[in-house]
Length: 430
Image (cartoon, rainbow, N blue to C red; front, side, top):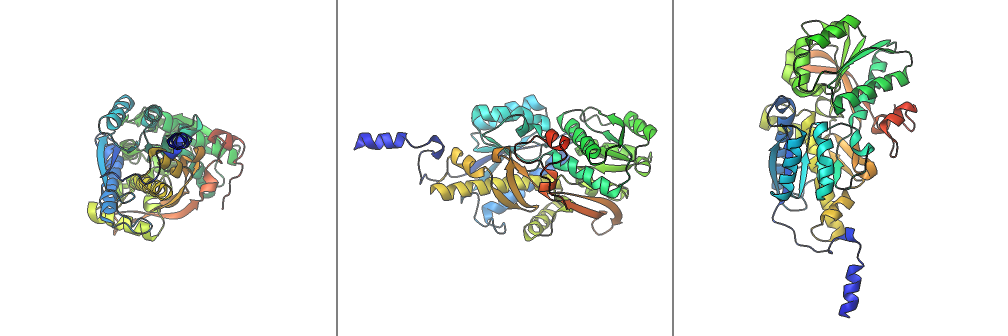
């Protein structure tokens, strides 16, 4: 009998863990990595940390609305351990190892910089440590290799770039010339290539008059602005983010670039509350999904926006929404795995539950539809700054268009470059 029982136990698939009914731990330890210093901190990293603090406290207290009324994660309180993302990819690899091996975290939620995501993802696989990317945008992550322990709970940059291309062609159907100014690393290069190629595929004959690639966090852009003004493109695309975007706008607006060309800011939501009245009209603004000023009017979003604004005296911008998506995705996966296992789930059971799920967020439903169920897709929204609103202390957005996820994301099994080159097969657009 004993030998038979042992044989049956050994025959259980490894992904099922050690069985059901495992006791819950005293806390779920979560490393949260975001910029807490440097030029990306104030517009990006701090809003993300604020969202994490708000959600962790609210979840632990059972104050989050349905469908997240259960306290903590699967009834276990969450303990967040915050790490500064500043310092570069090599430092982040070391910090990730420290979180996993020394701090003994159960998972890591992290990374705004695409360079950091690209560096840390293979290490997560090496350590078999659960990593949930919350903001980095390069599409290379799941298109160039498969991951088991890595998830990303927001859409990659293709939705921003293809959405921007579709939006600007609705705004300017007779568009003839475009230009770009983007940071010289994976995020900037990928974003510009996708936007440029999407515009050229949707409207052949459009000319690219200049492509500018300053280094990341350069901070000074007078030469690039002069080059843009000399070529006089109808549209200037930029995926600048954080301090780089603010510096570019502060330097370019007095020189009248916005009156000569339509500026397309794929991450522009973050500058609306920070620049306030200094933000000019007629600028195309995105939020890397239906976030921030472009978030839907749902009960969950009203709760999140009101709770965040009341606590931090400023509305949440899109990095805060991205962080919320990661936390709520983790909660959904753990609780789904717990329901399946009948006890506290193993890491492998959480992974199995995470793959391919759909979960609710302040930005609407998120589907883990790409990368074998590890990469999220979501809609994207764009609008144009219209008039300054004294009540909100930022510009209102007009001519808002929301493109559904199926319109701006490639299908499973097809790379973004292939999808654009083939003319967006299977895209479903309004």
